[in-house]
Amino acid sequence: DAKTTQPNSMESNEEEPVHLPCNHSTISGTDYIHWYRQLPSQGPEYVIHGLTSNVNNRMASLAIAEDRKSSTLILHRATLRDAAVYYCIPRVYNTDKLIFGTGTRLQVFP
Amino acid sequence: DTGVSQDPRHKITKRGQNVTFRCDPISEHNRLYWYRQTLGQGPEFLTYFQNEAQLEKSRLLSDRFSAERPKGSFSTLEIQRTEQGDSAMYLCASSPVGFEEKLFFGSGTQLSVL
Image (cartoon, rainbow over all chains, first blue to last red):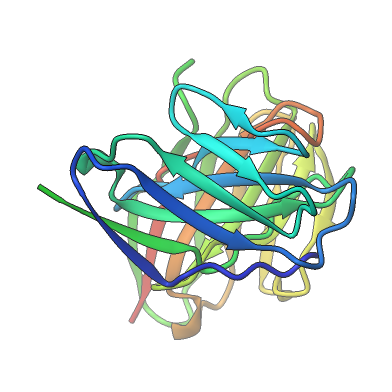
């Protein structure tokens, strides 16, 4: 499984953009990059995933480096509800499980 | 879509006792996963089912742990002879078949072993 490196914690002010980085230098060419987040006292929830191209959905955007060794999750306008632990997970092709690291704890201040 | 349901939300038990947790997945989901999470760590994969078949078990899952999904719907996770090190949040997730499919997690069962 590809190893990931994420900052332990990050801070943001409400309504500002947040860029959450993830290094996954050992990722293979067929591994998708998934992002999940875990709000306090809840199970993880899916945020976004992608392979090579940048991806957008209603929650966030995912920017994937051309060499695929890193990616960035972008929250365009942080809200207090976005305070959570964010996990970057390279999902091995045809693997049915997700392997979580320790993630980045995002704090959002009013 | 009522989401993934886990019961109970909290369980306190004494060392040496057996405990059982239940997970009800989203009804049309074939896959069901169990994870364990301790404070400050990400969830650790324990095992997963496709329908009633248990397809993979982590090396973390000792002989004291057993999981079942008898009819391919709900699942139970039993821990026998609990130890203090078993104290953790036990998370259940479900998904459709397909490696791009997202997992839907329940809110977990918090186990405290005294």
